[in-house]
View (cartoon, rainbow, N blue to C red):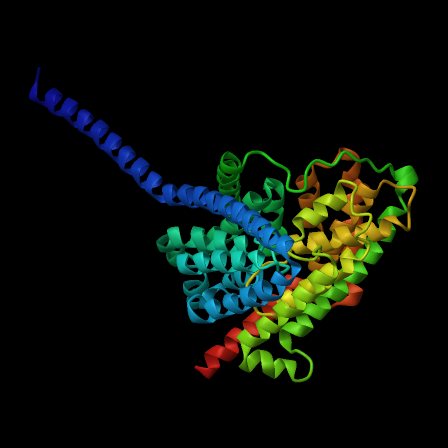
Length: 452
């Protein structure tokens, strides 16, 4: 064999080896880039499971103590809210708020300093601890809003280097973490995706779709592996025929839209400034103010035989399943407790409590149309109040549908009610809840930066 042929063959073998090495290098590099994304999604699922179990255990512990004597609430609830605010101001500054508005602002361009403060593992741990303290002391808050910030923090922190290099990548990680958190917390994968598009994204980047989808799948599978496959509010076997039940749509949509819109307006107004001397009291003595709010919550809870304590999950489930005949006042009392908890300054979410409030008002509206199934009216009340307060109709009907495994006949009524409530809410309040909270948070952030 001639030297030229040998050299040519050696060159061909060398080229093949070079291609294989290059392919191996690219494969390893690809795995290195994707591994943190997968790990973060799995971790979000585990955290959601811990959040869910911790919330239920702390809730049950509170009621065990409450059953011994209702007067214990006069100590536990004020002390819990006071402790939560003290820990927030002392150790976990980045864990304040409900989680969703803070995450919305963190997605805006140029928010690197904010992300370094609220999208950290320290902030995520603080958010979990403070929320569980709030739930455990009987206040009206949930973990489903905070899990949005926690999920975004986990996703962003584990992929920080890639996020810092490209703004679009950072945005996709925050979106994916938020969606995975909602999906894992409620066991509602579709609602997680819709929430990311409708409430968090608004101007959705198609390049983020695969990251969001993968994160939702892995987080959901992980949460199910720990908690089992479940429906948040159980399985509801109810149907609403449009021929006979069409009146429920405008009734629930209009009432829910009015109450939800007014609630959003009140919350945004109270977030900016409390009436009279209360504003200065909250500003100068935040811990004492939180304790006073906790005392008021305890009084309301004791006066209502304990039905207003906690997230509202168990009460809402009871109403959906046909109970709650003696809880006609639940909707208004739970709403009052929700507002008091919010102004206390303790970190916690309003996602699940707002659904509980809607269940209470749905129970009230079932009296207006007694010939229709109570469960159907309750579901429409939930989606109406939630959509009226947040102006996120797609998230509202999808999350209620998935959380209850509603029958196919409920899809159109839920969609229509959510749409009616959203449009009615616009006449009650100019801003949607989370958008308004995000604007207030942004103003406070700018004022703080100018002061420094």
